Length: 635
Image 1: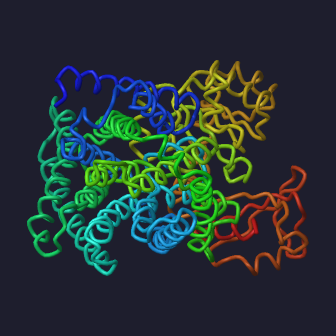
Image 2: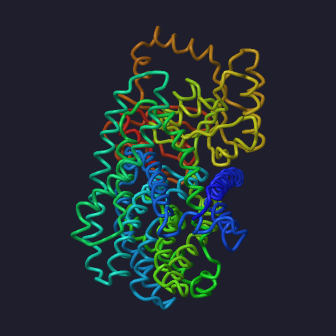
Image 3: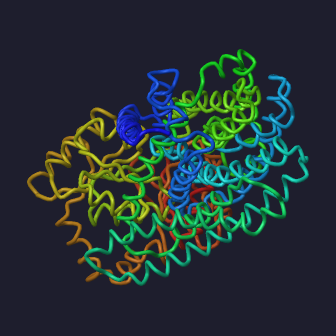
């Protein structure tokens, strides 16, 4: 039995190392999991020996329960952040990734492990079950750094959350029915469905009860704290209730001593509660992020400390080859099959193929299984445990290092980071501009230095980067290298001037538009070839339009609701050489070509006029038809 002092020393050390790993990972812009694993190995038995299985009682002690509750919090946090609206970005691909993609990964990994390592089919199936997971603990930090299109990020993050649950339950059922009891694969399906169904049902019920409690809180000084505690307790209750319910209802029927129904419960509960209207959401999200950081650090460092380097050495070159095939062949095969016939470009499909890093679920479940297998053969290391842990951690390390650490470089090489609009200043003007641009499917990033403004905007669903926009590093983190437009909208002309200079002279942004607050500063901005929007003149123009052109003014204020105006430059479009009449015949009902601008001159379109490369076409009409017209001319 470990002493109290020893446990306190271990826990505080892990917490400190976890925070340090997070800070270092943020600075280097790589997933913190990499540093957590390396730190765990250093403090483990093969390093300085600070953390050992005996500290927490091993497989028969408190370790499984501690890891289970910790993983529950991590999965709940990931599901809570998964917005239902984002699932609509790529619904078909997301569904395929968590079904067809999971099956392809399971079968492919099982075959590779069996034939390359000579492992028994049951152990190979167990490894395949675990490596179905692509953890959100790694994917989400990657998507925060590499700002690909929203539908790409949504598909990857949703796959991570759902497949974490799938892998956990599938692995437990496989371990119980195939590896331990040898009762055959046919029992896997029924056991999987029972655990999955029990977990989802319990998770939804607990989430709805928590929502009712949260809605009855009312507004009070202690409201944010109470809301944070209720959400945290909801995750733990959902996990415990699902585990207990499954054991009481089905353990006598299926005869299993293991369950991961709790993982399904926290995933379902987190998703449901995260998409309901709850009070103090910003405070809840900030708190659960901090809690998850500490819990994630504890789990990864603890589990990595139990990893034996001799396990990896035992696998040898065959193990390395298997890991490479799983990451570089099976993963691309699964993604390519799931994205065929959809709207993802070939480059985006290649990027998704390269983004399959494994995370917390394979590491935690594999380690606990290995401890149990070793406990059954105390005289020597169990070869099944060696294959299981060695293969799983080898894939984790390989994918985290090369896919997580190289994600930005992979995205840049494949050119999948879209051109975006960078807005500096998250005040009323910046937010209103972001709303209008996002309604037209533009990729928008807001930069602001005020942490309160940043949290408010993030809570409303905007992509935001916190920092001083006059600092080059802040602009680079926000993706200015891929910005087609920088809109500087702060109330400080000095800040607007410095940002405009950086954008134009240092980053060579094509268009920089700046808000000017003082009339005497207009010439200085224009000397930089910056397009200016004088705040006093803009208000005067708007008021004059309401006086002289009331119908047009009212229509302009209702843009994005009843009407829209869009301009597009013709580059390599198939429409080059077409006449205005031919182009107009292809436009959808409700969209009209209003202007053709060439060499700075705008004119009403003539039916016989030919469209030339470099022309700017202005479309007017209802929002959706106008958007269709723009996409038509981009082809």
